[in-house]
Image 1 (cartoon, rainbow, N blue to C red):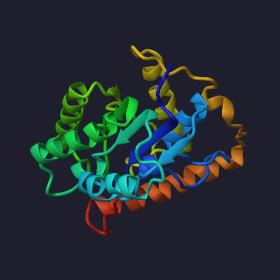
Image 2: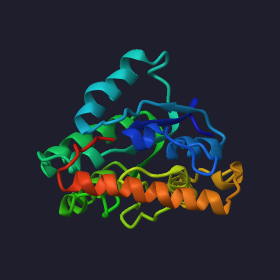
Image 3: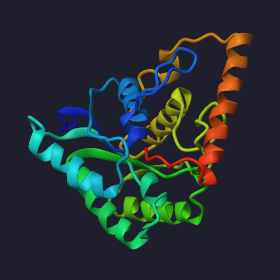
Length: 239
């Protein structure tokens, strides 16, 4: 029997923090929250919008240590998705990222029965983050292997209904797809965590012709804004 006393513990940036606009009436929830709902576990989330690896170490892990009512508790699953803001920054340093990611994964592994992390989509951002993404993913895979952390491969992730026009943030459906990939990895692991109900069975939506047209127009407008940012006409943002 598991010694864990709590459910899912999550760290990361806005992708793990969740929140955003509806997609066909479906709320944009964190992929880690969908994993918790699908496995029937409670959810504790310290992810912060705009976070990079420095924010995770300085604020999120510290927040867990100092502000959690039961910091000594163990969790069934620890989720970590970080690096997207790091590779989009001008000062990207793979070696520095590796050292700090190792600290974060060790922190999580010491408190969780099993841990899981996520690689970064290669087609990231506009302008594209480029080769830095592959470097980051290599680091993520290496550090995860050192700590026995499961990996959800998102290197090829991306589709219009799954990723927003910025080519960074998942849509509501994209978050569900990430969660279901994570659940598949968890179910196939040496210490399986079974899915009680697939996330897609927890949502209901209907599409209409007018809704599709409105979605097409909205996507085109937002994609134009992203293109303007890519050529320097508008400022970049962090997630």
